[in-house]
Image (cartoon, rainbow, N blue to C red; front, side, top):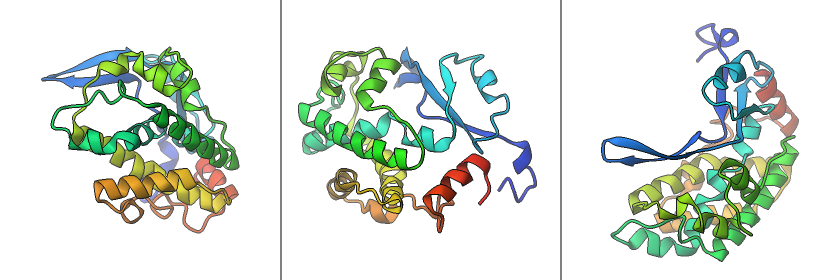
Length: 242
């Protein structure tokens, strides 16, 4: 759209890997539980940094720049948490009439699932030139949480007391499955890296939610990556040119 309007060279797009606040809606107000630290910021194209970081730091000094938007999308955060936490208890969480302490009930099984997903995420990210952290390392930096795994870290945190209704749980699962997991698996295939844990979560959670995310999820074509090889995708996010 920007190219069609002749302004692509005049506008720099920017994104962070996660929102700066842990927040929730309380009636007609927004409640901020805490402010996240060590936030990653990227531009598209990646080689057009302009003054984005300087501007962002006026309000959020915890931002730091990463090379391109592959780094922010492969980064830790929601995808390493929501689906792995939900899957071991999905029937209970999604059948309850009352809200769930989603993070306060994290199981050791969920922590192992998150770690398995992270191993795949790190491997695919590396194939595209990205260095990303595991979720446990990330929550220690972003929130200051501690624990031997994410189950222990989240159960003893501000997250633990948040009550999340099943309707919201379905929304956050769909966000991760549709917009990250599906294209992530495709990017893994393109790089020759298997992602059985991620694919399995798409299959199982899709069955539980009664949605075929392989059909509704974001495709490489949607991302503008259709027909490109790994090095060409990296070139594209860095320069905006194919």
